[in-house]
Each structure stands twice: as structure tokens, then as C-alpha cells.
Image (cartoon, rainbow, N blue to C red; front, side, top):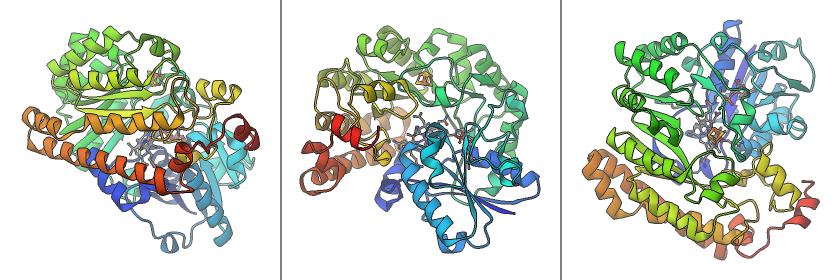
Length: 464
Ligand code: B12
Ligand code: SF4
């Protein structure tokens, strides 16, 4: 059979100007689920192709020819696009459509309206039976993979769109369970692969010539001894890449040996969830983190020349606009290399979603807005539009021209230029949102600014 996987992108992310802005942020990389599931199907003798819409405009007339099964992967903000494509493929081709990924796993009945079958959870143990027709249920609940060493590595040879970074996951899930987090709920319980299998995968990417590698684990340093062992082996076998990104928590500063090894293994860019500088807000989202940890983490990373991407969650109930501004100023003060302001987003399946739904505070069911860059709920200490403005202000104030020159002095011209690009993107983005809010009647920003998004009433009408 010919099987085509597609990872869709929302409307905004398919626009040329957005793709250009994104190119300043980092290197291209792929969602690995389709590459793993595709590997399983290819090994069973099927012809498999994987496409991503994020970086390329796809030619669907050509791509849909002769396909037997379409497999679409959706997160919440890409679900409307996945449904649009699924409806189109079912209407225009005789092929079957299977939907999977984090959003269909949370709301399978919604997804089932657009697909022949929906797979809930990790697809590895059922994909072949579903594609080959041995499992025919409309909603298939897949058991989680207990032994991750049985999972084949992502097969990059079936990926037909751009990708210059290899994504590696040494673990799935996270031992914590912050109230806004989707992945710690999707990938449950927390599991790790053997160090040997991770190292074998890295050897393979070195052979393939990848210069960049990301550890996409939700929390790569959750078990410091395990992370240290991976780093030791990377150093010993010269499996060091030009740049390696990972997700960590502030607590990593406590282990000096871990920091040394991360530095030597060239894990030189880390996204850490600082979230807020307000202890009450941190407690509210069950972060299990102290403000002092954030300060110590910033200092330790700077000492080890590991570039910090400071991630903030904007709009936690305990936070006021002043708290948000304080957090942004603090990220500058501790020398964060990048800022990732994320608007608190009540993703279906999370504790915040349940809480806000009960309180009648969810403003829309337009899933495309659920991308952590748009306000989708009624905040406590400000209006929805004020929170949207705080988001824009935080990018604008963090990415200014002066800081670009500071980054250039610390890390070199290439980084400084990329930072200048981000500064320009932040300014243009703010300008575009402002124009849409004033003049774009019918746009989401216009309705946010003019209070046209509903709360309890709209929620009821939309069946939330
Ligand atoms: C790599 C990554 C990216 C990359 C690449 C994206 C791309 N090429 O489209 C980048 C950095 C560019 C990115 C961008 C974004 N991302 Co992202 N990303 C990830 C990350 C870190 C890893 C994905 C991955 O490889 N997972 C590992 C594999 C094993 O899991 P999987 O792909 O989900 O596959 C399994 C199952 O889902 C299932 N499955 C998957 N696909 C399919 C398909 C079928 C047919 C079936 C049956 C089963 C199935 O089986 C697989 C194997 O078990 C995840 C976090 C995470 N842990 O998943 C966030 C994550 C998916 N991203 C997220 C978000 C919000 C975004 C952005 C909106 C961020 C932004 N503000 O711009 C954008 C949107 C991009 C888009 N396509 O429009 C959220 C989504 C939350 C949600 N519930 O919607 C996540 C979960 C992170 C988070 N904050 O919690 N992302
Ligand atoms: S620490 Fe990070 S990955 Fe773990 S539950 Fe919290 S937000 Fe999710």
C-alpha cells in the first residue's frame, strides 16, 4: 500500500512572512511520530512518504495520486487544518484517512467526524494492524509502549520535506505534572530508553551527516545520572554535534558535574520553564520550583556557556501585568539568550482546561488560536486583550536592537544577526496584531480587543 503521513501547519504558519521570521528562531526539525510509525509500515513492505506543511507549500494535486491511506497528525492548533485536509482527501480520493497525535488523542470523538479511524495515544503498537485492516474500530485506544527500546528510530529517508536537525527522544513524559502541560499527560507514565539505544541512534545521525541535534525529551535532565551517562558516552565516542538543544528544568543547576558534562557534550541551548517570578503563580500551576532556583539556574548556565531560552507562561491567575513585566526584565537581567513568552493555553485534557471550563472562562473553541500566542481564556487580573498586549510587549522589549549587539559581543556575529532578525520579527508581529485589532473586523484580534469573544454564553453555545 502507499501510505502518506502529513503533519499540518495552521494558516499563519503557512504564510511566507511567518516562515521567514521562523528561520531566525532556529533550525528546521520534524515531529518524529510519523517518522517512527512510517518506519514500522515501511519495514512491513509498504511504500511510505512523510510531509510537513510547516516549512514547505505542498502540492496536493501531485501528492495525493495513488495513495491508499493518509495518516494525519494533529496538535490542537493544527487540528482545524488536519480536519480540512482529511475532509478533502475523503471527498476527492478513494483513500482511507487515519488521524492521530496529541489533539485527536484528547478529543477522539471530534476527530472521528473527519476520519475513518482515530488512534488515541502512542501509535506504535497498533498502526500496522489499523493500516492493514485487522483493527477496524472507529476509535482505537492504543496501549502505551512500555519498553521504549522496542521502538524503531525515526526514519528520515521517508521525510520528503526540509529538515536539518535530528530529533532524539531518550525518554517519554515527565515525572512532574504541571497543570497546563499536555505532554506529561499524553506520554504517561514517564519512561526512559537504555543509554545504549540512544547512543546507537546518535551514531546513525552522525553517519547521515546531521550537524544539529535536539533532545526533544520533555525534561531531558529529569534523571541527572541518566543524562550524565548519555553525555559521557557522547563525549567518549565523539558523538558531539555543532549545536544540541534540550528541554530542562531549573533544578539542573544543583548538579555541577551534570553542567560540566552538558557543556562538554555541546548541549549548548536549553529551554527552561521559568514560567513566572511570582511564587504564588508557580505554586498555582504546580511547578514545584522556587524563585531562588530560577536565579541560580540562570547563573549556572551562563557559567557553563549554555544558552538559556527562558520560557514564561503569561496569564497565570495569580499574575498581574506587573508580574509579567518583572519576569521579562528578569530574563534580560540573567542574560537569557532567547525569550519564549507563551500565553497560558487551556489545552483540552489539562487541569487548567477543566478548571476554566467549569468556571465559564474559555473564550473560544476555534482550536487554531490554541498555539500559546493567542489569549483563549478570560484572565483574572486583566482583560483578554490586555494579556494579548502583554504578550506582544514582552517580545518587543526583550528583543530590542541593543540586546542584539550584546548577544553579538557574547556569542559572535552569526548569533547577533539572528537576534536582530528576531527583533525585527517581534516589531513587525506587534504592528500586524495591532492593525488587525483595529481594522480587521472578523479577525480574532479584533474580537479580543472589542470584547466580542464570549465567556459562559459562548462556551455553552459551542458545547464546551
Ligand atoms: C518537535 C516539536 C515541534 C517542532 C517541529 C514541528 C513541525 N515540524 O511541525 C517545532 C519546534 C517547529 C514545533 C512547533 C510548534 N509546536 Co511543537 N512540539 C514539538 C515536540 C517538542 C516534539 C514532537 C515529537 O517529535 N514528539 C515525539 C513523538 C514520539 O510523539 P508524536 O509525534 O506526538 O507521535 C506519537 C503520537 O502522537 C502518535 N501519533 C503521532 N502522529 C500520528 C499520526 C497518526 C495517523 C497516528 C495514528 C498516530 C500518531 O504516535 C506517535 C508515536 O507514539 C512536542 C512535544 C512532545 N513531547 O511531543 C511539541 C508540541 C507538539 N508542540 C506544541 C506547540 C504548541 C507548537 C506550536 C504551536 C508552537 C508555537 N507557538 O509556534 C508550533 C506549531 C507547529 C505547526 N506544525 O503548526 C505543543 C502542542 C500542544 C497541543 N496540545 O496542541 C507540544 C505538545 C509542546 C507543548 N507545549 O506541550 N514543535
Ligand atoms: S516540568 Fe515541563 S514537561 Fe514536566 S510537567 Fe511541567 S511543563 Fe510539563
